[in-house]
Length: 235
Image 1 (cartoon, rainbow, N blue to C red):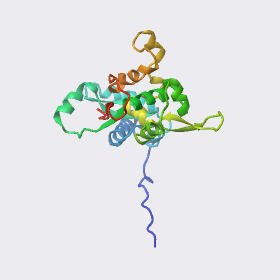
Image 2 (image 1 turned 180 degrees about the horizontal axis):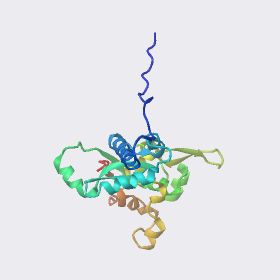
Image 3 (image 1 turned 90 degrees about the vertical axis):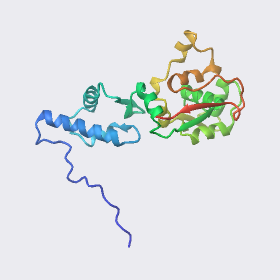
Image 4 (image 1 turned 180 degrees about the vertical axis):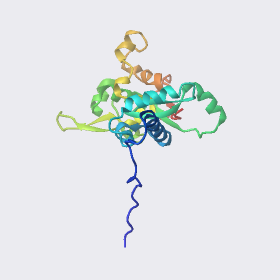
């Protein structure tokens, strides 16, 4: 006989807390949100937080008050990938690194992969042929596959062009990795080029390096010989 899956013990959970005075209720809602963010390994989206507070509570104001209470602490609540996540402040990255308290987790991107990723990020949804047009060279399926395996891109809607090829878009993992809340937070390529920081599509990877240290200084195009290291330690 199949065992019944254990149900979450949430029948007695009271999100409204009407028995508490307003100030105590607000503080408890803050504590609940902070506890969930502390425990969650990934950014937590609004619907998940809405389930633990009253229907009239403002998630944004609660987050704002939590952040105010964390001033002076080595960690903060940040908006990333369409949700919120608790992260240590960048100024403490060196101390965490020297302590060796966390295992080093690195994601290797070849320069070619980084260029393709930037092209997709700024032109999505875009087909493989569209990326090839942007970069001025053929893009192999292996590069697309590698970026999908690293959870940086995924398939988007079919293109309305003949043959209806797949398009590609970036993932929430991409946003989380580069510390972006939405794609609107991507650096403005036109502004960067006007400022002389970029000289065209061939230097597009430099835009991503602003957020996460992509090393785009190699000169070769060989994927195996020319690699870029992106540190995925979320500090």
